[in-house]
Amino acid sequence: MNSATPPPAWETLAAAYRQAQRRDPAAQDEAAPFGFSQRLAALALAAQRHQRLAWLVRWSMRAALTAGLAAAGVALLRDPAPLLSAPALEIPGFASL
Amino acid sequence: MPFSDSDRPPDWDCAIQRVSQGDEAAARGMVEALYPQLIRIVRRHLPRAADEEDLMQDIFMKIFAKLDHFRGEQPFPHWVARVALNTCIDKLRHQRTRPELRFADLSLEEVNFLEQSLAAEPQSDGPGRDGREVIDKLLATLNPVEQVALRLLDLEQKSIKEIAELTGWTPSKIKVAALRARRKLTQSLQRLEGHPA
Image (cartoon, rainbow over the protein chains, first blue to last red):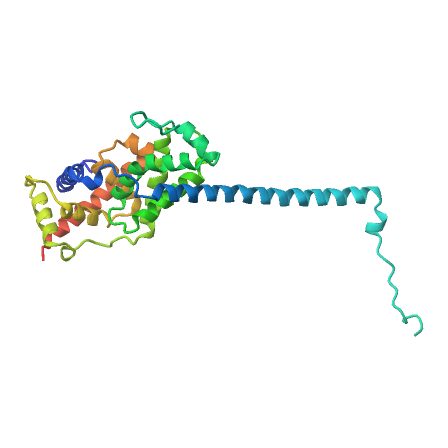
């Protein structure tokens, strides 16, 4: 059996389907419904703007975080003492016990 | 203007550039120019879809969202057709596959059409909508890849090369899917022939 050849019954059905498809006006070119392109263009461009804004916000946050880390690094290199030394712990009234 | 002359094909590069810059008129023109091509794809692969307009909206939103990824390696209408086809396949995956087509599921007109076709009787005026519905019902028993492969190969008579370009599938995947689909359909048709009650 040559399995690559379509079976005759299916072949007949497919041929009938194609014949009907060619004659069906619904299968022919159909323009977009009224207002569809306008609505979709507005939606798509709004989504595009939102996408760009989200990108800007994401990279702004990253830039701010990097700048903060860099500033802390520079401060640490210039004078590490105030940042690294722990403040003296004094508990009032503890010495009098 | 990319869509100014109806006799000439649209200037897609110009249209893409303008849409990327936020030109609403260009986006509208793009929707109007692509709609007939995409509605044909949707109707052929999802003939029983009730939410056709929502599906078209999904397809166009995907096209606009991915517009920056279009590199021009293939013509723009081909790239758009692939987006539409993949959306249809996703939709088919979410639909439940009909387990088996039974004789009782068919209307009288569908039975007549099937009997005439199986007896290989030429139909003088061709099948009506019922004739096509019985084929849609038969195809609905296949998995999404098999359905799409068989529709493109046998109903739209596209070549393996064309289908590979359209879907991004390998030729062997298409051949295997079509082979399995035809085998399943042969079994379904034999069952329908053998158990007419």
